[in-house]
Length: 449
Ligand code: PMP
Image (tube, rainbow, N blue to C red; front, top):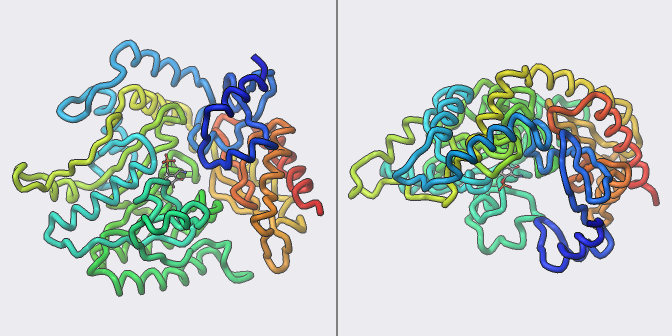
């Protein structure tokens, strides 16, 4: 089958996510027939390096033989079973292992099937915890400027990306937004650390003012991904952890995008030596194989729900596919690879290569900032470097980079004017080099006229 035939079939009946479908009148849809390692291959044999890990989920390449084998094995045993009143081994083993490798005090696992659902679980659990404790006035959430936590109404409400949120504002609960700690907003010459400390003062003031009505603060540790790969210093997390204890407010760490080695450590919270009251994980949890998410929480939270049925303190939240065994088995195979392959250490070398391959772009007249945190490297295109003036969004310059990269055989999907690499960990130095050249060519073609 040719690309065009399959595109025609798709466009006649499908509605794609995060897409103005009319764009496909001019922008080709890419039908993928197979994947292998970092490569995606279309129906005519053209190959693309998956530089963004298919929306940040893939860790060890497409069609990874070890994960394939694990899922196949599970398929012969049990594909799925209701998770209320029933259980199975993959979910128990996965939970034991997650509790072992995540920051301390997280001793309970509650599963869902995508990132947004995990965020909903964490928000509801936090609110419900306080209610069960007789503090039903604690109903509000603090979120960060530029944050992103998903698309369902609760998750959207605690996010701050106007493009996704504004239209639905009348449907969303009100939240309190603290100013960004991201270093890209720092004064010229000011360090990321200093800026994060300075910005924390505003967070602290909000905590002090609203503590009595606050359930939790939710944030993406170290990198605000969908908000433009905006990075901040870990000191912000340490200060926030302390303050949340002080003001009796939960901390929800959304590591859905940054967990599983993305930021250079297994979990981003490790870099600030903190733990959260709720840790949300998804995406890399199954290395991009199957939809699965989990919220880890503390014994203290768990105990607040543990009582006789008639007290109605139970957490009656559910999803049909909670704890799906196939997905859990893919996650176990993923953790095996981490344990056997020295992944975090090897990523350090890859991260260094990404840095070196793009360093020369720092002086490019239309590059405002290159920022990196482990296996995430972002290049911000600007109209005017000295003033750090961005291109108007209507010009869709990032889209030109996307199109250029596709032609050259790479899947780069900029966030507005921010081009980034977030590749599978099986990428090679040569492929990183190639991506850097494609990104540079993409920028040249995007800044024309
Ligand atoms: N939180 C963060 C930090 C994310 O990056 C995302 C997805 N990009 C989500 C939540 C939502 O996850 P999902 O798309 O699986 O609903």
